[in-house]
Image (cartoon, rainbow, N blue to C red; front, side):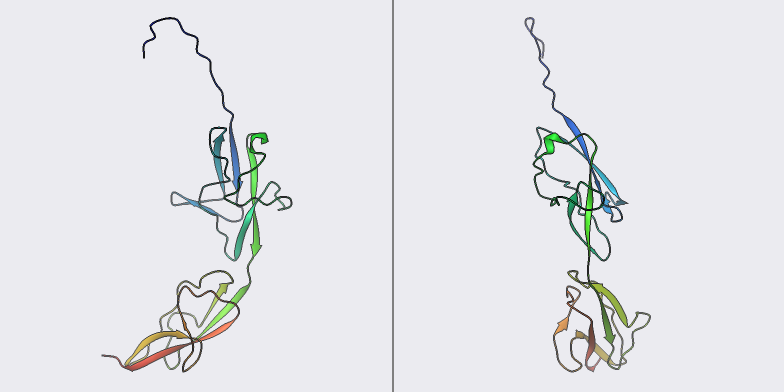
Length: 178
């Protein structure tokens, strides 16, 4: 653009501040890297949401939200909440992850005539969390149908099962393997 006459330009400044999200001892996974803190730059022209990065993880814990104090006291802000006083925050304000310990349960695997090798016969899992990987037993000349809550019947347990307590699951087998 080339002006045709003299003109006066007025700069309009917007505050740019950085919010630091500290998930310690949890971690964020960003661009394939595991990190404990994330810096988020915001300005008045942007929506004022708490971190839009991945939700941090901590084994055996659930993220309840973010607080302005490292001891977890005070208001807990959810990931998607608008922070009411964001315009009043100083640059480099720190928000700390508030964690809740999950219940720990044991799944015991009964191979029902088969073998679990080298997989263990127990697995520690957490409440509110899917089991994930389930071991696959073997048994000569039999086809494995899956893990069930009873030796001869019961409900099939899959990797999306969410435990509510300690449980023993049983391998179910069918006929001759071809």
